[in-house]
Image (cartoon, one colour):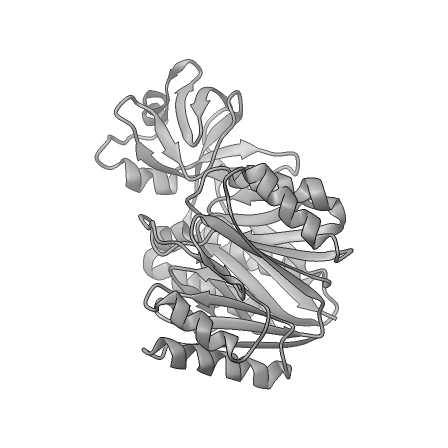
Length: 364
């Protein structure tokens, strides 16, 4: 396997795309798959048209920023070219999440083992169901990584793409016959005793322990409706999971009825706690995630990094310290998007996370 990683922030979409792809191709000597990220400063079709002139199979999404060893590029294009791999790409809208995932998985079964990379629209409903559909077709013989695409926290213009075209409210995915070594972490810890979510619908929690969700939340976190968004970013919900950690669910809005809207679904009767964090611990966890992912590869060659955008907003100027910690711990080039939810396979089962860093390392 040969790898190329490059990025460009040229103001012209076509030039930026060609510059990044050509530089990556110089490193890899060709491309059986090109992983492509672009910010909202460019027209996606102009980017994809320029890329299509140089390579064949492509998978990618729009993002609010591109993670690189030089920091976060808020306006630019990033690519990773892989040569010497078997790859299949897939692009689809999502009407029935489970069935959409199953259909993609059926196509991907032509590759007997390896890594599935998935970029769903970070704002659609049913991403956990989509991942379960993938798993129902593919099973545990694969690593699953990826992240939700988006432009900013209030975006409705998220787009996903392959060489087949560009869509909204769907997902782009690819499978390669190379098993990447991946790890995940977030840095939040439980602040409250476990509580039962007694009424939910979709992404909204209506009741916790039989009381209105916000009444319970504000009892532990001293906030009101006006500053809820700020406190919700630092004090999300955590769902205990079998691996001994917590899956984070990010609160993003309050309803007039006292409900709390989350980035992703929480099933009714789930056990949750309210989580807290320290900025220093968040940054240390990113470093630990890199070390764990790298330890699974004898000779690391490259890495894909999926880092939640809410970590950047929470850390502010200190987010550059997180990128620096990743760079200093990662002995290889890396690229990745700021994500709206991250995908990682715990016990080889794909799970949709919030507020995490996922690092996937490839090599010999």
